[in-house]
Length: 204
Image: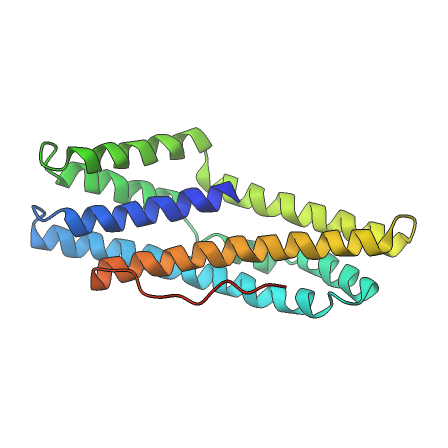
């Protein structure tokens, strides 16, 4: 999902800029680190919840009818949809970018500033970033619900539809795990000065 890539890139850039911004006042740095850490923590919690909810769908992957029902239940799960995006995420990320821009020396850190400004430009192009995250999730669940109906009707290639559904879920899981890995690396950079090793992405 491109919208998740944008989120991952924004958080990682903030972490690197904070790491390099030696001219920041200590009080300001601590506040920005706390803000970034809080955002990362909430993203971790959100994506972990969705990954857990995917498990029964994956467990049903070898039985077309069970898979169809699991897909339909996942698509209708409003609690999982709500968990997918932490509340006020867009505003928090944008405020963090603004604070970083205003607190960095524009001469010494001009390259970093340009990177921050580019990320803000990308966010503005997305428009309502919060809505875009939900839109990406809703597009996924609509597709899964349609596949569930096709599998249950038996009017189309059930084996092909089942395999396609498995592929979509696997790709979604990979995207989530990749974003989660990026968020964890961001926290490691900001808290320890470097990214930590992560486990390879699981497959369906």
